[in-house]
Image (cartoon, rainbow, N blue to C red; front, side, top):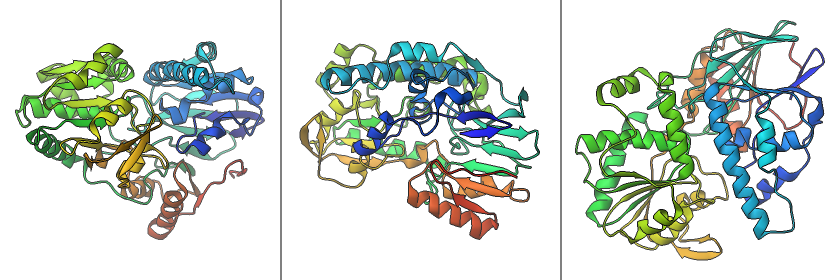
Length: 434
């Protein structure tokens, strides 16, 4: 929460994700009175940034919500899907009401407004400008210019530049204060340019074994990036011709929103669209909406590629596919993004020989592969490069939104390499900007 000239506003209001104990915190009261919040600014539509907006509404927030248009469209999908999941969980566990319901979701969008990139918008005591974060479609950094003087940028999540589809993260030169993410603050990705080559190798080797490649994939950005690369590999005949299933109704709807906003893609992706048409469509690709069709995928003989959610294997259709394919050495589970501590995805990356899915213990015999360069987050070195552009004017960097080890590592790295003042911000602690 930020307070300026007596006006309180928030940037993002997301779900806490990870181990069950962490998720339980979502039901706790907010550390502030939602009725006192005037504005809520949303950086992008991932659940860990929008997932508690309906709860905020339920508990008294009556202010205005702002984001880009794609973020609003994606958030409506994500929150509606989340309400259905919560309702199902409540039916299985009668001890607690859902965190929110569809009425709360509907109420969230009654006063949700949109702003374009680079348009300075005036509010009492400050103005703001939206800069492209390059993280997912519509993602933004908020640049606040307070009437009292200082400039503050809050990054939300920062994109893994250069991205497959999106434009690069914009510069924040001239910033006084910076609040930034640190998800990969203590490690680096392989170059993004290696993703397609690695994907080609994994698919080719798995198909040669007669196996299936199962990809737990986030609905926003990750699925679209992988489809874009598969499109190239299929069209150029660099992988065997096998069925490819996108088994996620949410990811399918998200992909339709991506098709609607190709003007926000980078130059290379836009060129591909002009020359080759729909980059999310190619031979033997099937989008699977119906659950009965999803259940028949395993019955289709022969190698195949399956993309399904959720990206951390903590629910959704992916869990059934993993239960079926994990015990067979011919198959490959391909992790393509950050896996929170305690998730099945993290357990697989950590090398566990068995995992528990829907209460059943499943042996892990399949190959576990990873292409973490598909991550939509900047890595440690690129975080430093991002800050370096603004180092000359920065008075303070607040590092947040990462596991403690990653946040502390990045803060120290910024101090050592750039000589800027950087600290790991503490939850519910106040900081005064001069």
